[in-house]
Length: 101
Image (cartoon, rainbow, N blue to C red; front, top):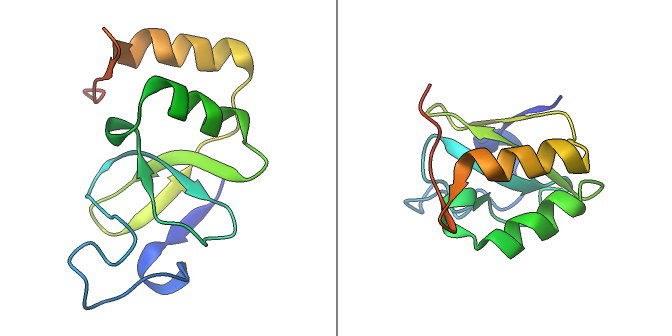
């Protein structure tokens, strides 16, 4: 599990940009390239197929949550069964629904 301070560690962070230059949208489930060379990719902005491709590329991408304090916390890689269960739970009618906790 990795905890990344997006303001100090992300290579594309720009303090003058509203989204930090990294597509930061606040708290949410997202993917982050492990070498920090791409902006965040929030689940709510992705099509199901795009999210599946990122889950399949777990060697290159973290899956986790962003916080309101500009931190990204990765979750352990999930196997195909857990990914399928995740889609069944959060991807209703083809659209991502933010989990309520």
